[in-house]
Length: 249
Image (cartoon, rainbow, N blue to C red; front, top):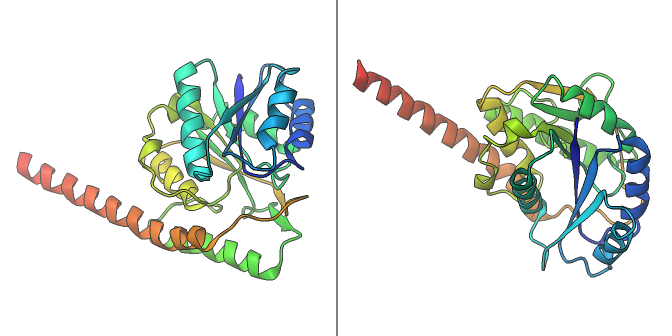
């Protein structure tokens, strides 16, 4: 299967080239990597551009300023679907939280599923090197999302995933307003509502090797508000559908 691996970056100079090199050792020859850089002041884009001049399978998309993770993925997905030729799109973080060793397994699972999630919360999955408060925030956040939205995915906010492009083409991902980790469960709700074949594969999630975490109060706020917006939209759509049915009887 032809795969495109999308990696958003902002100030990942220390991590991006080592990650790219590990990925090239793990992925099939026909797979490509697309780095989406949001105007990193540390020169991340320059490193990727220089490496890409020697390795045609590494591509770079640059944006003028920090516009958010969700926006980066939206731009990348639109480009990939416009260009065509890829069977799957794989998404991952740039900081080694998502190990390249799982990439072949996620791609393989996408042969029989529309959405595959590298999960911390299914049996066999785990988290390493996180403080207790971050574990509690992540676990509680996922429970909160499932409780309010009904999304039957254990790891709703994981950024390590693989999607079939033929299914992604029917997803209105441009409608997702969230820019942080809430973007993930909003997108996955779209897959779920369209009866996607979904699988979760256990992974070991490790804290970033180098650099600082970029979680903010805005990201946490989005995580609290977005599930209710999703639920409201779902209930409104269900109510409208019921009213239309009654009118036709």
